Image 1: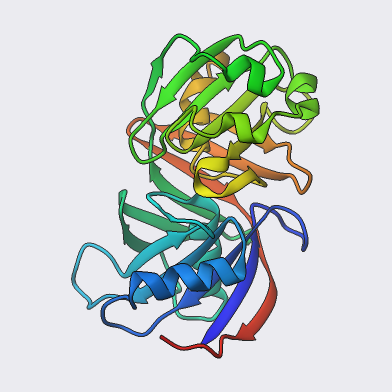
Image 2: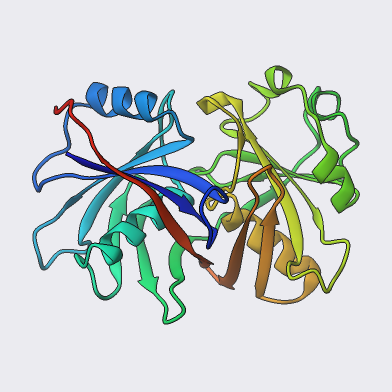
Length: 273
């Protein structure tokens, strides 16, 4: 079985967020236990599994994502990686529709080589900062919001970009303070930097201490910063060690996420289901 490692939300190898991608034959998915063991072996923040669906339906491919610890409802970078593989293999030439736990998602290739994902926009509910968050982060938040069901993150605004970049949180203390994880964000310090806001994402609850670039988080970051900056089209920089750029376009109930992807490993998985 062919397996690829694809760096997503970057146009160069060894940056962005790496994802495992396995394209399966048509039919039902293998047992969950096998999918989870593969994801644990790949040991990246997500491994995507996809199989083709019969023509004429609402979607072209069924898609699932697993961290080394559990299955997740929504993943942007592994969806981008899967669409990249489908296009580079010549399996898809136009828009691709995926069916997943979070509903129908779409991916469209652009002339410049980037891919645009069509995801549901997250709701944002202001809330009082839960006890322990500020101490675990090591920073005083400006505001806090809860995100939608399929994300389950706590979105925390910090004072400035430098605070976000220099943050050294207590990862173990963050576990249990949200359903999936905590996104920290601030406005870009330099308006001419090529991005409008910066973020980082910590998800110890699903086995990921820090995610390099979190596409799904940008379905919440897009409405958050669009409301503050007065623009629907923005660019976010996720300030992890690998870094990556996510262009966001807020379209009401849907958010478009655009980025590049690069295949860095193309191999064979010898342990079949």
